Picture (cartoon, one colour):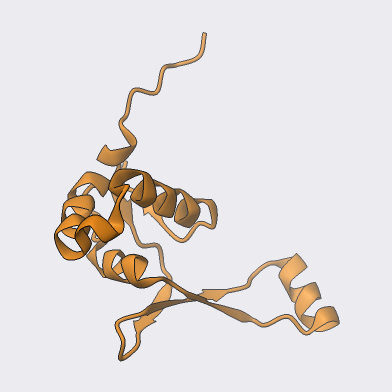
Length: 113
């Protein structure tokens, strides 16, 4: 029998792994992702793929990224996003959950256990 996962996604606490990032003069966050591993090295040599990929977050993501501290849940972060962007960020929880699912799928964030 499968174990039921009754953890609410909004209660999850994201944390930054060892990823370099910077904020430009407009407040946009850029993640600097090093392309490691054998397949990436082959692609870099054969197809001139870059050693570092630069991922530019949108304005909402750029607002959220610096707030990720390993202590605050997604629900806590949602309150700040709602205060900052209001209706512009709605549907708030769905959009924020999707943002974190994408970050997680690319291993740009980890989760506090």
